[in-house]
Image (cartoon, rainbow, N blue to C red):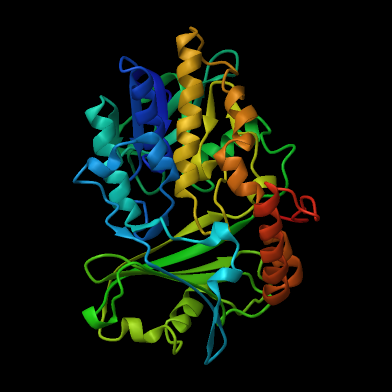
Length: 428
């Protein structure tokens, strides 16, 4: 039955993923030309369903995308960072690192503590108001190519497939969505992104990809334990000094606290179970008071791209481009990627709009996006922190983080130069 032809729909631009990158690209395209037909596919049952709640967002991308967002009474950026703390944890003690010693790029003042799911829902509303079509509940399952091997769109998965993979009584073929250009913003290690990277050898000149796992919980805490606007990052216990990772507490509005734990996946300890270590972390004397008498109301986990500057593959391919975490634009020491996701969506959309205005389609015109991102705000953000992950992996937490901090200071003051050059990750 899979040989039956699928129905198809034609668009100017097909976008996979209604995350910050995909929605930013959709909005930017309609800002450039309101007559463009733009569709966004989202695998979640609703926009934001696969976006974990709790994040500190640098508004640089939103400021560029929606210049008057502060005048929108429905915007989700309700809690500005008021207090920024960095802790080193031992088994029973905590040492607060002085803020003045931290590289300026680690300063969170001026950023916002948000539910990233709410941000995406708000962006989706803005996109739909501009005429963008958003289809939640449809996962893109296949990349489509034309006769020349150039990307021409995607197909959604077949419906009504039984557990053994055979068609059931309600079986229906997926839908083909054809676009003059296709943007892939499906997140870390997305299935289509992996196919495209392999097919076009986009990582041939990149360093090894690196990954971590991030676990998050959202808690409703007692009012006396809540400090709206507090951002607290910590590292050390319960992880050993040779295991990279860290933790965070973000105090949102309405007595909500997002707590998270990140472990770099190059750890060597066979007895390390990140979820159990996360639960241990919450028992630390400096942490547990926040949650006493509180209630966990949501939880989840996601992969994190940690390779950074040197591991980003070629982000353009014939007929489209990778955006957001599909490209690997996360800033590891800042634990921030949404600002770069939005900026990448904007930059890619600008290049798509220029190509469409010139009458181009399904070609390599988006090489202009590849050629410009390293010199953009995205590249400047990632270049300054490019040696932190390799140093941490090689030298351990204390020495690696210490030297990494000095390297970030130097890169901050020199516009990205480092006496270490660009360190390699060495292995996957």
